[in-house]
Image (cartoon, rainbow, N blue to C red; front, side):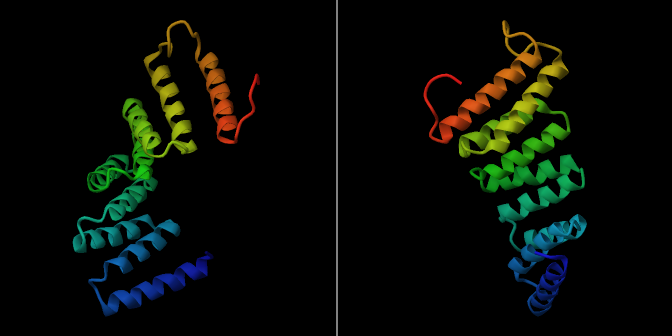
Length: 180
């Protein structure tokens, strides 16, 4: 969608809201558009208004969390992600984004737990595998320890992760049997 179309969408949502201030979907739509325009504070305002109207809207909490993440307010984002999870514990995207927020706060163990949960819910989610591996490596580096006794340095582990990703990719694409 082009910028002018976003502005038209906001105008339509404004008209709808002026006609019915209790129409929660209009706040969701306008908040989403504000997010696309990187007007995160305005997006948060609309999602919060929606939550006043419908306090059980998991996607509103999720989108509010996203906006806070873009503003680098990770603790606040995590609060909203937690609320979204309490309302819908099966949406894998919220675990990925909460994991990202934990990683930005250097809470790599929690991040890894969230990426693992996202993978349980959606096993083909490459972003979760990648982010989990990055969090795992950062955790190892922060603790200044080897990842697994007998494997050696982080560079060895990175190489093994690359091979694992290649094998996973081949398997998911029908794969070829035999050696690399």
